Image 1 (spheres, one colour):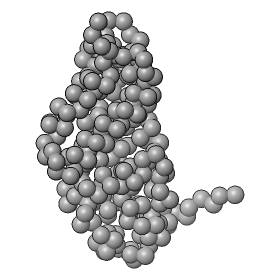
Image 2 (cartoon, helix red, strand yellow):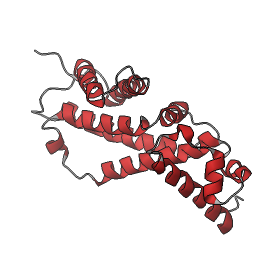
Image 3 (cartoon, helix red, strand yellow):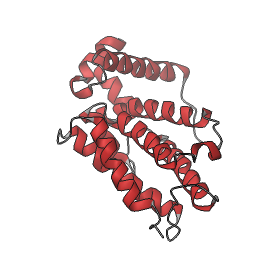
Length: 210
């Protein structure tokens, strides 16, 4: 039988997460300088307590990224715009959603690294809800592509020779590539990343002109 965490344990864990989030905000989400020493001093706990709760710094940082993913998912869940309205400009709808994720995972070099380390199969200390939230965001994209593919009169037309789930896999690859280009300073302007993604999306998703 699994034992429930003691209340004191949950309080300590919450203090550590709150301190990490507060210090990250002070550094404008640049996490490279965020240390266990600074967090332990801010939270009033021993450094070893941090590792006891989160395993390592990446485990702790994955919860900060999880919070941002939850915010993104909450906005997507709260958006009750009908699919018909979103499909007035389907390419823009896709690009808006793709760029929203890119902006989250590129807030810092560390954030992108933690994301890359934990997509697909998470590491042992990663926040357990990490992949669940990514899957939910992917599901939103897939549902939109499925609608676009079958709805009459939506232009430009979406290709019909690929399953929406397969197309989402391609979009994820484009997003990761765009994030790497931005964080490696090969491209320093997110608007240029968006333009690049637009060309990729159009080439990959749109049905050939008849």
